[in-house]
Length: 265
Image 1 (cartoon, helix red, strand yellow):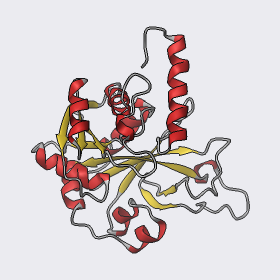
Image 2 (image 1 turned 90 degrees about the vertical axis):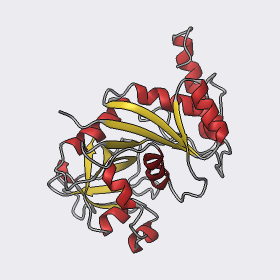
Image 3 (image 1 turned 60 degrees about the vertical axis):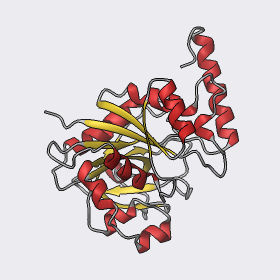
Image 4 (image 1 turned 45 degrees about the horizontal axis):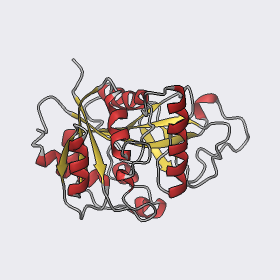
C-alpha cells in the first residue's frame, strides 16, 4: 500500500521583487489558486493545504474552497513553515510514514507528473532515505554554466551526491556517458513527516552558506535525498519572481483561453 501524500504550499505574502504575488489575479484567478488547482491534478495527493502568514491569503484560499492554515511570519524558509503547519495540523510522525510534498506558491505551471515522480521516488526508497527531489536533463537552450540553474549529481543508488551552481560533473575529455551528463535540479521537495521535525534541529552548514543552496544542509548532516530523473514531454513551467515573469504567465493563460473560450484554467 502506498504511503499517503499531502501537499503543503507555503505562501508568504511578502515578496521583494513582486509584492503580494500569490494574490495577483489578472488571469481571473489568483496565483495561489492556480498552484492549488495544479496540485489537484496530481493523482498521488490525498490532501492539499496552503500554509500562509497572512489572513488575506487564508481568506482567498478558503473563498475558492481550499484548505489553509496560518503560520508564523518569522520563518526563514518554506521548509520551516511546513514543519509548523504539520504541528498545527497535528499530522503524526508515525505510523504510516506520511509523505509531505513542498509545493512552491509561485509555480502555477508545474507538471502534475513531476510531483508524482518525486513522491514515487521517496515511496520506493528505503526508510533511511527521508527526502526526495527531482532533476531533469538540460534542455537544448539551457546553459549548464549558468549559476542560476542548479546542478545535481547522483550516486548509483539514485540519491544525491552533491548540488552545485557550478557545472558538475566536469566532462574533462568531452566523452561523458549518457548517465554522467549534467542534470538540472528542480526545487520540488518531498519529505517523510518525521524528517520535518528533525529538520528544525539541523544547523546551517558551510557548503549551504557558500553555494546558497539550502538542500546542501541535508547532505552535510549525513542524510540522504532521493533524486528522481524526470523526462518532460514539453516546456517546464518556471517560478514567478518578477513582474515580467507574471506578465508572461498572464499572456500564456490568455492564449490557452483562446483555445478554450469557456475556461481560464
